[in-house]
Image (cartoon, rainbow, N blue to C red; front, side, top):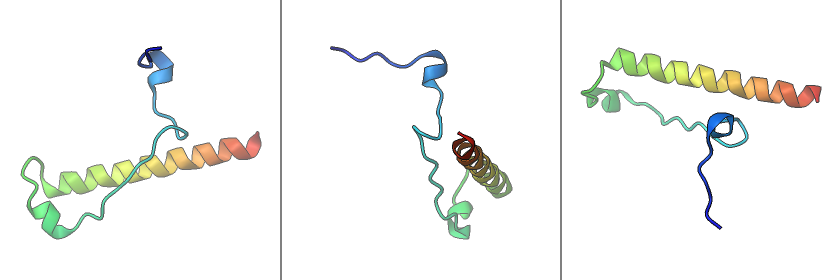
Length: 66
């Protein structure tokens, strides 16, 4: 039986079906990024980490109340 891609709300990422993996950003890596300014890369990584932390806390909080 063929599987069909998820659509609508079923296609969204949830804490149960995804993970966030951040690499250790070193100055030498940032020196070789030519598509964005290093400050922008740092800001984006920081925002991603804060978002992942917020989602994790929301998921943990929801499980405790249930």
